[in-house]
Image (cartoon, one colour):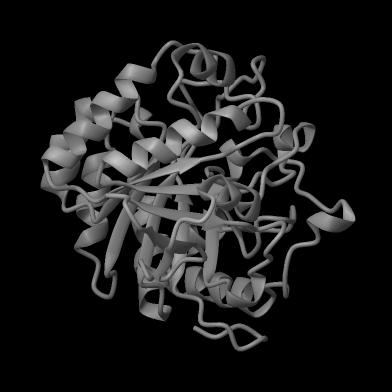
Length: 312
């Protein structure tokens, strides 16, 4: 599919729940009541199969915490069977990853992104509200043992976990992993904190030799660093705006199809699902046709919903 600006739209993020077992500072308020009526597996498969017929090739399952859905691995398996879908991946906080790694591997999962903003136990408890750092690390290890491609996502906030950048870089230096530093966006609770750009993090590497590396089709810029076993990536939506390359739609946990993360605009898919496949495809086409040129975070424009509702 092509939008009105000529961008190819072939990637859809699907939020399967707004429930989460963490309360991260920049994402979910501690007082939040996470009681969203989730889309059924059948609803998700209907939207995704219709989207695949129109040109969607890559699906990312998100939340909230998608592994809180006991049918998550089964959903991955069914999505992988849709004609036209090339990859199905998952973003998780990793707490339940050790428990479900085998099922996800058997389902055919193509990759897992794990959110991990610090390797310090006390700092982890402060950021997330839970003492689960070692559960996450165990989950990463189990996924890697099963041969699942794992990327670690780290959000750095000024005055919160800036001093953890060096330990995360050391983690990459001595382990064959991919770590991506994601610049904080002013969405929901994230508007209360100040992010750190990839350029600032690169300064921590000093005079190290960097070699650009390509992984996947997303917005991240990756580097091989001389002397490092792992790979470092950066996603900078604020300081290095990449909306001109955006290829995605978002289906949130309430069934709204969003063409841009930054706006509250969305299309309610539930009436279309009840009507039939052609109605679903018509809504998808409309969402693509009305996809905006880019976000306006720099102008103070941001959605009212938090990332845990939209799909992190």
